[in-house]
Amino acid sequence: MAKDTSDQHPSGAHAEPTHQTRKSTEASPKSPGRRRFIAGLGAATAAVSTGVLAPIVAASSASARETPDLSTQSDFGGARSGNGLPASVTNKRVGEAFALRVAEATQDALVGPAINVNNGDSARYSDQGGTYTKGLPHDNFGRVDLQAFATFTDALNSGEFSDFQKIVVGGTRTLNGPQGGLAFDLEALDNVQFGQPIVPPAPATASAQNATELLEHYWASLLRDVAFTDYGSSALAAAAAAELGSQPTYFGPRIGGIVTPNLLFRGAFPGETLGPYISQFFIKPTAMGAQQISQQLVTYLPDIDYMTSFGDWLTVQNGNLTGDQNQIDPTRRYACKGRDLAAFTHVDVLYQAYFTAYCVLTSIGVPPNPGNPYIGSKTENGFGTFGAPDFAATLAEVATKALNAVWYQKWFVHLRPRPEAIGGIVQLLMTGQNNETDVTLSPVILSSVGLQQSFSKYGTWLLSQAFPEGSPTHPSYPTGHGTVAGACITVLKFFFNGSFVIPNPQVPSDDGLSLLDYTGSDAGHLTVNGELNKLGHNVSFGHGIHAGIHWRSDTDTSLLLGEAVALSFLKDRARTYNEPFTISIRKFDGTTATISNKGNP
Image (tube, rainbow, N blue to C red; front, side, top):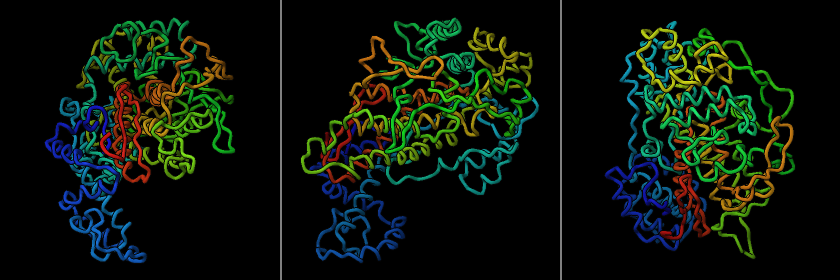
């Protein structure tokens, strides 16, 4: 069984009483591989072998009998003796496959549920002003209809499909897939097993941290059309860096305690403060087989923002559309500013950037992870396992698992409102309509330079949006883009050598029309791991901070959640490989996780 350096599952389930049982199971000898692993868990699987599994076994027995193995004395690693395999199943490999599935399910079940707690805002505000309510009907001040809200919470509490069909919505937009959070997975921990400390309660609406994150949004909206390469000479970027840097609850990267303009809207994982703002994986031309990929984007025209009138804002909160549409820039450009990143994430397939990164990794010749079992082989190479088809397909597979895990957090734990919703409360408070909301906000935002600058530009205290419809119709925390990013990046680190230095780094010109050689002093230090970390924040902050629809903590938390989902998935998958291997990857926090199927690494 694989482990990370903490020897505890990243979900935080070490706090559960079942953890000691799990650890004692992990301590059992497992070499020389998956068959001993199955045998060692034969007794443990007996406790969960009846009931649910029986119909599945019955349905598969007929096909199992088609290729019998006469060596029926084997118990298939405990499958015959204790875990419910019917006597009619005589094929040895079918029995081993069954035992493996049950053994891994048992091991995952022993982890137990994680602790999942929200920030208490739903109970704190009787008008639900600190809770996600977009798509439900609201009054003229943006307060949700509480009877409609009750139909919403009834569905979340019951989990019944029929109750979700009874939710009273306020417009034509439908809620975005809440039942995905209730889907089960057969090759990773269950959604309910991810939680604290990876996913703590979201910052409370009235907290200084929430206000600081909202302040970052207002500055990002003002800088949406400033090229990242111009931040160093931009007075606006300097003002943003100074005000954000003065806040102790600003958790972006600093150098010597200072937030510089070139550090704005970056993540703080290893390698993210090196080189250009845009990851090399977002701009380097590549190919998918014979199809060339230039990485130039269809983006939006500058200086056109949305939801800057209270009427439009209220229309959108009720789940309707204003009739506005994003205006397409006729010129294709490399991503060079915040609006470009927002445009990409407006229409992307969530794992798209990481599949493209996979193409870049192969086209620039990045070697496989040093633990790949085929390195040095003179007789064979990886293909369906530890080869290109495995690399590519696994990205899509883990993305779905990550998405369902974060959907559980969004809908069934946190219900964090979108930044645009709190921008509406800012509007009420700044126009003297305090009696129309139960929510109070920190002076960090209400007395800020960034808020005043935004008012000077738009004539409103609302948070401008890059999209006319604002955010999607699902809660904010954590983010789907970020969780998929964390999972896919972890898979890429599993398959590729993360310490490889990327050759010939480039940077988009300030108009995005060309790529220039990057010649900074750190040009020789841009590694695969660092640029993958950067890519995750590029995409998720592009969808969040630059578009105005997700908080910084949504992304930072979601990347860690995605990593935890991928590690769970890879640990379960490890025993399905026939090749013995031990692979190490560098996690987002800089520590090492090890995945192996040949004993305790």
